[in-house]
Amino acid sequence: MAADDAEALSGADLPELEELLLGARPNLTRQQVADRAGVPLELAVELWGQLGFPHAANGDVAFTENDVTALEQTAELVALGILEPDSQSALVRTWGRSYARLAEWQVGLLAGIALADADPAARLDELVTKVLPDVERLQAYVWRRHLLSAAHRLLPRAAVDDVEVPMVVGFTDIVGYTSLSKNLAESELVELVERFEDETTRLVVEAGGRVIKTIGDEVLYVADDPHAGVEVALDLTRRGEDDEDAFPRVRAGLAFGPVTSRLGDVFGPTVNIAARLTSVARPGTVLVDAGAREVLTAGEGHDDLRLGRVRRVSVKGYRNLEPWVVRRRAGSGTR
Image 1 (cartoon, helix red, strand yellow):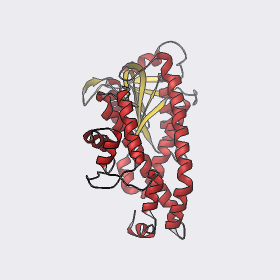
Image 2 (cartoon, helix red, strand yellow):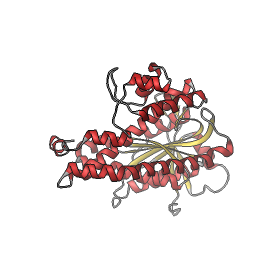
Image 3 (tube, one colour):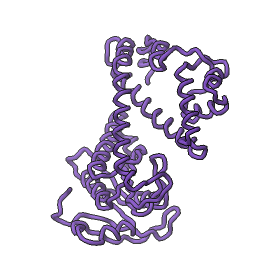
Image 4 (cartoon, one colour):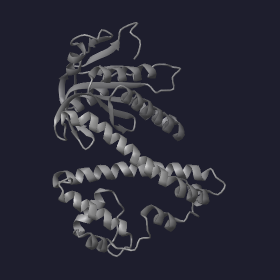
């Protein structure tokens, strides 16, 4: 935020905002919170650090009774075995990173709206008071919908974290992103990335897949059906090659094989191979590994695809990796 922007919002009542967001004015130190929750201070500090909360010194009055309740609930989850020692730090860090990113985006959005008003500070106060409660309820609703979707997907096969499941993993990234970031205005670059992420997510979801994460100019997704995963990549590259489409040029790499899911992320050689294939793919092309090629050409229903062998490549961690370029046959159209 520029200095002028910060000055425009300097009239915002931060203590009032603090009370609204925390549910009360801070009146406790971290030691008092730990004592009331019956949790060792060392554990409380460790959890807060993993969540990415700002550091509070021993004498800082920075906490409320809601922090006591949250710490008690965390201790209860530990006691129930939900937060086991070997997964506790990873899970808490995942929460912290996800909510930190969401909060940064939301505050930036509200600040931008407020700055467009004649009285930015008053407008920000109004937005926080009226909008944030609705946003909180909406976030809970979205979370529950995703819980239901995950339950339908995972419970029938009793999949759990750290169990390998065969699936297709796809990476799609923007071609020439470094050059674009130097030549485009910041607003134009943000618009480009948001369009890329939004459209990619929409296509992945429509195909029955799941976006695992976005990494700047790259999207990582998975699908149970290899053909559906490849169709997503082909649609994205086709759009990127259309001069009349505002979607950026992209390239994609996919691999099929056992994948380990953990805390919403995916791991294993299949993921690594998909990433390596993306790094060697030409602009506007889709590369798949031998495992994906085998399932794509097995049985019936895949006559719309044409796979061509590409010379073997050596990439980090893999010598003589065997890529195959995938294209739609002429006249096959799109999904």
